Amino acid sequence: MTRHVRPQEVRAVAAENPAPQAGEVMVWDRAVRLFHWLLAAAVFAALATGFVAPRPWLDAHVVLGTAAAALVLFRLVWGVLGPTYARFASFPPDPRAALAHAGAMLRGRTIHDAVSGRSLRDPGNELAENPGPEGGFSASGMRISGLISRNPHFLGHNPLGAMMVATLLVVIAALTVTGVVMLGGLAKEGPLAATTSFAAGTTARDIHAALGWLILALAVLHITGVLIEGRREGQSLVWGMVTGRKAAVPGAVTAPERAARPRLAAAILAALAAVLVPAIVMASRQPAAGVPTAPLDPFYVRECGSCHSPHHPSIAPAATWAGIVDHLATHFEEDASLSEADTARLSAYLADNSAERFDTKAANLLRTPSADAPLRITATAGWTRLHRGVPASAFTARAVGGRLNCSACHADAETGRFAARAIALPKETH
Image (cartoon, rainbow, N blue to C red):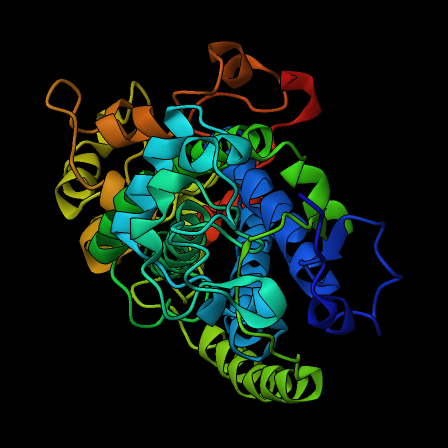
């Protein structure tokens, strides 16, 4: 059978790419290829910073997630205004067709084994009865799911690839939404910090983590499918996404030729950026909900900071502070007694700024006292959970000076925020 390259496929990309080698056509334009590899890099790096890297890597994770979201936004626009095989219309998701195609792949049949060894152009072959322009075979106007059992070659995305593209875009969009909610509720940062509670952030975190595992599984399935399909077709689909070229198999299922509209796409993307970027920046500058804003009372700093770093009152509930004030004469084996007036002043300040008054991560996780040691903040389940990855030797290092010296590792301890980016273990503890 003689190889056949349709002229319109070459013309559609001639302005951007050099003429393909004999037997190949240009399928993936430069924008699609760049999107593909940038998104893969952003997703895998985001997974690494989210699942493996320590908490101070949160900023990098947010940047990577933002990049992935921007790439998806670009792909949505380019999927409508790009060239033929960049357009979503050329690979509409079809679950039944995808399952049928997966079955054909698992059976290990190759393109050349299709239709019991008959040519794709043989009379009676359903493909031959639905020719596309200039002898090719069009994906429009015929039921792809009915052809999968005969293993046709798809010049663009096959049905399984189409479902994967749609699923990945949806999952990344969901990761973006849950990530923004999580950032606003837990870290009290980002465009939703002013309106998102810690409880909502916690729920978003759980969904975000589940979606992270899901996209990792999808990535593994995608890579596996690409390798299997490439072997079935007798060509490297990975290399095809680098060069943009695929083998021009006679009788391949094609899509109607469409010219790219890059200027319109650029205008739409610029308009979206002009609206979204300022809106996100302005929303991110709004005061975060439930975050302490007032500096520590100088009286409190003077009286309590003389022996240890002054803890922000939001890291313990009112009951814990009341118990501590009631036992100042035996304050952890020290006499920290104050006058009656000063004791009343201290008690009122601590109660007015206790954990119940705020919605930070520290306030939420540390507001439940330990049953065994109700006056020890470091004995709470929340404190233990937050510090489970810190070796015991770090607390005894001279630069830290004990578990009570929060400021040694948390640069913002006195503000009550305890942001991930503000965590830095002194060099002596490494």
